[in-house]
Image (cartoon, rainbow, N blue to C red; front, side, top):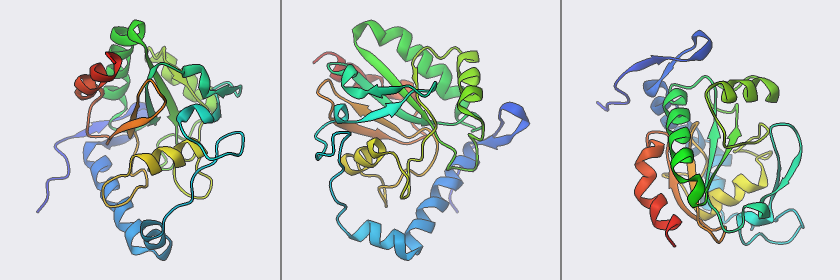
Length: 217
């Protein structure tokens, strides 16, 4: 038998969700992808390079544009020279409280040294981010989030945001490159290059050593 989680947490709005659900969901997503023809094709066929906002093949995250939580386009070149954590977030996940708290801690500690956190809400995993952008913003601000919030996106499938397609190509995942659950985190260096990928069971504070390495470069 496999231990899929240690405890069940009660999420916001009364949703009973937790680490057990998250890990089981991760496994099920991977199994479903591997068992479907489309998933097998995605795993076996080389994916074409991702184009940036200008239509040219992207060479860094700076080549992309994304709408912020208020719907305003943000050219990611504005983060040039910063170290980034890019993460897909959800309001009703068992990992939500811990990740929001630890992201706040990291941001407070490292903002002056050049850290920026880019949070992308996504509703593709267990329907755990069902709200509007305005509702998501209210939720995040209520939990002290001062880092950068973006509009809700897909991170998998044909409608996945190009930035997330690029991140998955540059930092593949276990079994399949697809994002498997909420709070998958990508670390990006000061040159806009993805240099690490961390699953939801890795807490933000566990990224500290790698984060400091790139902040000190």
